[in-house]
Structure formats: structure tokens, C-alpha cells
Amino acid sequence: MTVTIGVHNSNPTLYYLSRLDLAAEELAAVGETPVFHVYTDGVRTGALLTEGVIDFGGTGSTPPITAQAAGHDIVYTAVSAPRPDHGALLVTEDGRVREVTDLKGGTVHLAIGSWQTHLIAKALDDAGLSYADDITAVRAGEDSEALLRSGEITAWVAQGPQLAAALRTGGVRVLVPTADVITDRSVFFTRRELAEKRPEVVEALNRALRRADEWAAAHPREAAEIAAGHQGGTVDDWETALRALPWKTEEVGEAFLAEQQEAADIFARIGFVERPVTVAHAVAGRD
Image 1: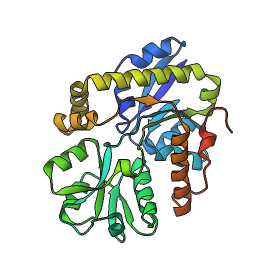
Image 2: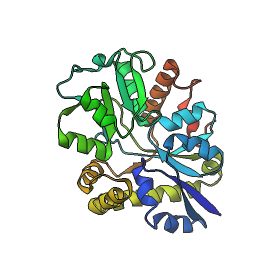
Image 3: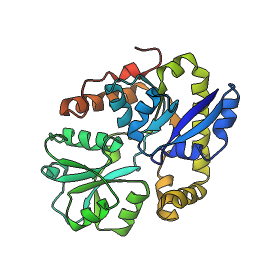
């Protein structure tokens, strides 16, 4: 039997796992072989699990919530440590926006459906504003930084090497540091059937994740060269971004589930998901 692991550029641990032999080594111990399925949109991870295209995937905090809301029976398997410097909401240094309430009526570019939606929805909610009613959320693109700098949009959520490059260039500032609002963890999940019938496979995958983290933490320059060569950007900006990540995979804990539930409740209230979600149901052994 093979285990198909979903890989996309936005999940760094899986990105490097797919370029190492660690998954093969760990899965061999339980009689399995890995296959990596590359796709571009992490938001589709829940659907790909349900459709059987992949058996295991990883995203930021939002996609598993929207997956549950869409009826996908997922189970969390592991999370990363908090990533306080992974991303941030940027505004122009000399612009009118000085605090979150100044975003009202503005246009914010972000990766809609990713962890960035969690960040913005929670930041607005904390400030008494609504993601649905008080801003115009637009999917970010290659021109988002230029549009911000020209004043055509109000704010932009940047992450990884794009954040490092924007801050290095200057002229922008961080309005909302991610750590002030959410923990911004990588989240790993699978189908309930695999989690509950083959827990040894899940544990082998978790071991492989931890080893991939250890490799990336020990080889930041090499990891940066791989990413820059494949995804673009400079090696230096990638190294800055990769060094900012914790490179530590942890068990799914109650604090994480509580944060996810808070996000799910906000999403239901603003209509980002069609129905309320009980996050705790996405834990092995719970219905």
C-alpha cells in the first residue's frame, strides 16, 4: 500500500519532507510507501482527502475549519509550534492607517481561505469590526505589494520571503503582528478512517515531519537555496523567512483546539462558513 502525502508550497515542513527520504524511511517501518501529490491550493486539502486523492496533508489554521464546515470528516494529527514571525499585516509607513479600526472601508489583500483569513477576521473582531462588512477582502497576487505602496489598497498580509523583502525595502510597517492575534500554526490532518484504523501510519508520518523540521532547522541556507530555485525570490530573503520559523512539530492540544473553535465561531458569525463547526469533532476517537 502507498500513502499519498499532499504537498504545496505554503506548507514548509511538507515542502521539505517531499525533497528528502525521511517519509520513505519512517513508513517502511509500518509496511508502507510514500507518494507525494503536488497541488497549488492548500484550501482544497479537505476535499482532496475526502476524494481519496491524498491521504495526509497540511495547511494553516483556516482550511481544516472550512473543510469541517463543508462536511469533510477530517482528523487533526499534529501542529507546528506557534509561528509569530511567519507573516504580518502591512500598511504604508506614512499612510492614514495607524490602528486596526482605520481599516474600516478599506481593501485588504490576503490569501483568502488560508491562515491569513483567520488573522484578519480575528483582528477585526477584536477591534469591533467585521471581516464581512467593514473591509473588502481581495485575493492577493503578485502585484499586491506594488498596489499597497501606490496607495491603491489599504493593507496587505505578507508572509515568508515576501514579508522579508518588503520590510528590507522599507516604506511599509507592520500594523498587526501575527503573534498579537493568533498563534499561526501549521496544521496537519488526515481522513478519520486512516487516523482511527491505521494510527501507526499517522505516527510514522508525524515522525517524518519532526525529522524534516530538524533538517530544515539545521540547514537553513540549503533550504533557502532549494526554495528560491523552485519558487523564486532571493536566497537571503528565503533564509530570513525560514530562520523565523520554529521548525517544531507538536501534539494537538486543548489550547490549539480552543483557538480553532474561536476562529470557527467567528467564521460562522460572519458567514465565511455556511454552518457552525465543532472543532473537537476533528480529533481521533471523537464523533
